[in-house]
Image (cartoon, rainbow, N blue to C red; front, side, top):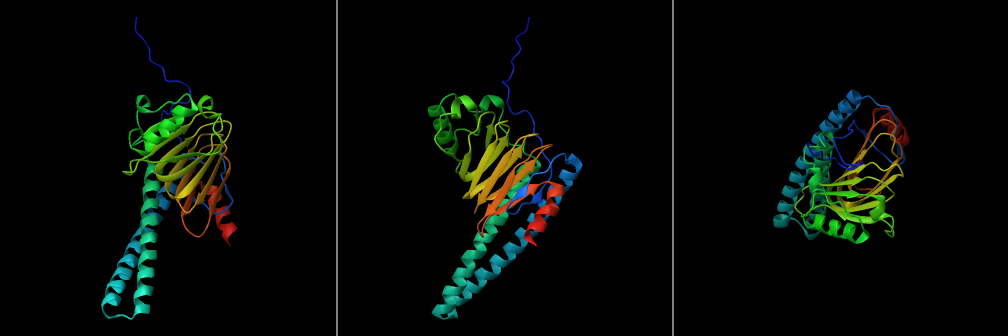
Length: 262
């Protein structure tokens, strides 16, 4: 007689990954997009992100050279101007690099995912807060969030990825526990039937994977996010403010997104 070990319902075992579109303010996820179309879309976005990074890199180098030259022979006004341009170029380069990171994770989101046994599986609010603290410190690389542990949380749950840049995987398995990702790199598997809300702060790089039929709403405020919608996934994705970047993986909605910006 053998003992069979079973994983509880809601445990991550693979993923639903599709392609992407450029998400602007008010973009809505559409449904039933073939996996091949989504894969092609992700590839196109990845190429676009690489080109954007290369342009940002060249511009940052030019700004650095101008700033170095102005520091030697420029006037005070020229020095201030070139330093400001250099700072802006470095910020743009960082965002372009973070977008490449997010799209790479969206293309192969299971590559760095911890085994189920390595996920923190909190059962109380206190355990949730400890898991979040341990994740920021790099002691935990996966967290399961269930209704029983999050129902008594007051407001959004703030989460930060490990400081060393290692991705943190967060699976919203049940209930409604809106997240605010403040920093680090985080992959959110949006699985709850009660809805999934994710805010992305300026220092955060986030990939959101929407399970089939789930409602997912994402708000990007200065950060970088890629949202991947599976069959029948729906919800609104917002990009607020002049900085940051949002890609929504969904071929049909790409056309609608562009119309919103015309």
